[in-house]
Image 1: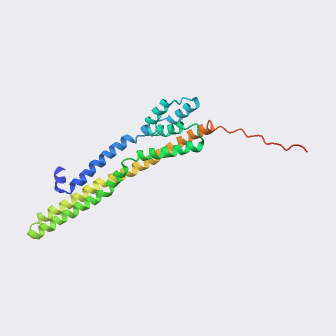
Image 2 (image 1 turned 45 degrees about the vertical axis):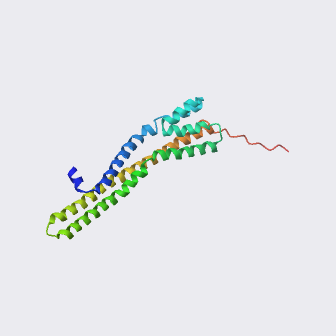
Image 3 (image 1 turned 90 degrees about the horizontal axis):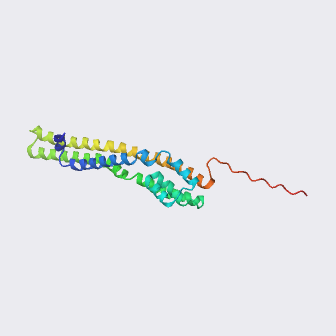
Length: 217
């Protein structure tokens, strides 16, 4: 395998560098975007119970915000729980944008590697073909080994670029869809907490106000 990579020439260096970065990003995102780390099971219901019981001291909220992205989102609503519904909702939206941005960290880099991988392979292909034509110009076509070296270098660079780009693109789309699913679930929990803070216990129906009957003439 090492001999094959070395046969690709110096154009293999940027491809291998991109592959190392892509591997590091994939491993880091797999660890960071675990569901148990982003959406701890039962946290939404637990936070709503805290809100009903008044267990919302500043230290408690700080611990909640630093525990997980969902905890940070819910804590932002609890900080302004005494304000109007519009203010709480605006705080949730602002915090949600920041949380979503952090969950998408490094994904643009991974997408860029998926895009430039084939281009780097094509660049290596062009370099290999140029080398082959220069060898032919200097020594003619009598020695097929001179042509084989340039063609082999071109094919190795192309194949390596595709090997790096295809998994990077697939995993980029996978992480994007995973983050989008997390955002939907976090939005559900945020709306449930918002309703609990502004309307009381979810599901409770408001008592209708009796209609005023006109006075008898």
